[in-house]
Length: 458
Image (tube, rainbow, N blue to C red; front, side, top):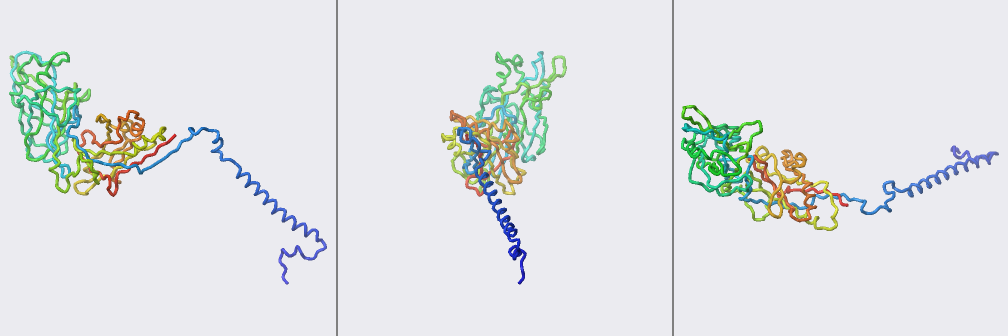
């Protein structure tokens, strides 16, 4: 019969002891290996995790928990405040603007005028007076006729006083001018020159002893309290913007009156009355919004009624705005177990509504800011914007069709507010000078607003 190699160890051999030793040696090797493996396993199972050494002797306050959630509810509402603050703006507006979704917006402004220099004295004869305006942008039907009316106001206005978009404007009954504007170019800067009636020049100089500025006695600002600029007739909507903010220290004014006159010797002279003076004039904007003129199937359905629609709206020129309410933040703040909490991330993502016709990425607002409100009704920009504007974001993501806002600093401020003056809500507003609106998906929309919140709990 065939003999396998392992069977040779049991073949008859006078050296049987040697064969027995070979088998025993093999078994000993197996046994030694098994014992070594058991010892190593026992040692490993008893070894303590280096990261946990000393855990039992540390107080619980030395440990933190990092938590994250994106299920906190965000409720959206469309609101409108016709008495929004509008004093001392960076930009002033004239005319009107129409939007199929938002309706008709009308814009006017009131401003002081300031003397270019103190009156030089002497006799004079007014030859003419002109108004120079630098229109920064023109939107609408540039082929339509626009009539500008400039009227004298009867109550002095003040730089440090509050004025609103619906503030009344008492008038003296004197109109400085009613002028047809020249043809304008759309979407560009227009520098225009307007001839005003000579009578207005004589009216300004009717008492030359008042042609001075003073902070201790009545001066020119009490003599001519200010002017009211408005479009009183138009054949189609046209909106113009200009800046009454002071020019740079080395810059020139762009918006002013020049009065041309000659003295008793026939010498020609000029005298300036300035709108965008270095010493800023008090001024404010007036806006009115007629939402009912919007197209029937597009007009806003819910304003100030507390109804959570599937879309919400943000409008330029102190129009409607979207308010986000975050009730989950109030629940966290009210829970005593969250006494020590640091916000790592607080991010609101808001999908934008596009109809790919009138509402496209190219004609919606490129950026949106957020404000918060105190219990007194005062509004403030969220601190995240001033700390780091690029991190705050708020810009339109045209690929994902989304606005993102990082508001960790605001949320931390709210949670640490022991006076309970800050409300758990934020409101959307457009940057100064932005004339493009935005429509947002909200509430029960198929892609609603999302709030991502990550925090460290001590």
